[in-house]
Image (tube, rainbow, N blue to C red; front, side, top):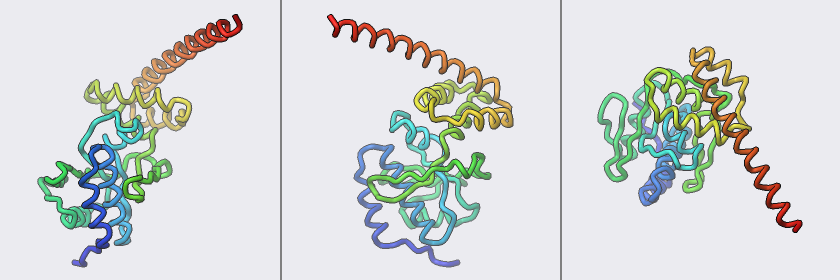
Length: 217
């Protein structure tokens, strides 16, 4: 078994990450260091999925302390985590008591589109993480709601659609929703957000008209 290479500078950087007070930023920084170790060892860089992606697209409004990474199906990820001071606590999870940090490597293949994975540079480390595309994380949350009626998944799918409405690839979403058999749930949420968006825009137009009229007096 080959030794995993971890640059001394990365280990020093990891120590500074422990001092980051914002849990969302700290988790992103940890994920970026893990990704760099993969890259330095010529192993396919993991993709960040799950709650940390929601937190990233909502700028930390979503709260989570799990770092979910889709990575190669081998013991390599766990050996990396051991080098970074994590302890494997079950078949998928690794825990670092210094930061109360949990990293999970979910089983199975990546369910989203690789073409939509985004590269996000983490300011605190200057390193890059590969983040699940926004359409795919929205679809994942709606799928979770459809299968479990989890209201939190519904809430955050709705919020993400509202924030990113004008930037979403609707054609892709509708085709994927149909394939995942969640097209009814997806359309219901989309129509709800669209009505709210249109009502809000009408309200703001009226407010702006009133402000202009006051200025002319």
